[in-house]
Length: 114
Image 1 (cartoon, helix red, strand yellow):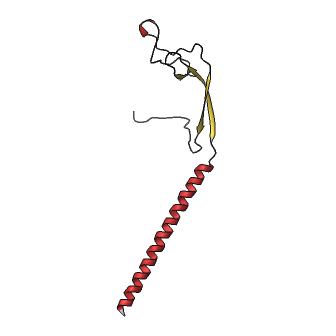
Image 2 (tube, helix red, strand yellow):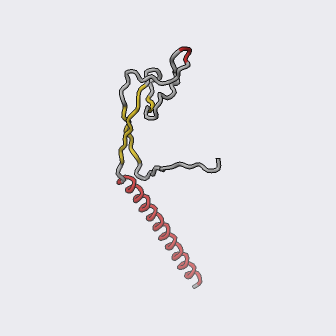
Image 3 (tube, rainbow, N blue to C red):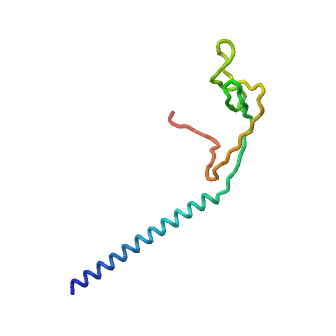
């Protein structure tokens, strides 16, 4: 008789473990699906920034909105002392990029302990 009681207890433990594993796997699948659907349904925001010029020396783009011609790695002038980008013949390029709707921008950046 004790043998059948042990068998019954083992069956109950097995069934409860099985139920636990099934429910845990089900919850994991649901959470994973919700996370995927949320990221798919999030609308993309497109932004653009004008003020980019093309340098004919280094064939690179640089941002002119900060009031200077930046530093060109190729350089020009007498003995290469003038290392600013050259914008002659360049159009005003406007770069477009997508923003992640979950990102936030800081208005102010502070560094402490420096």
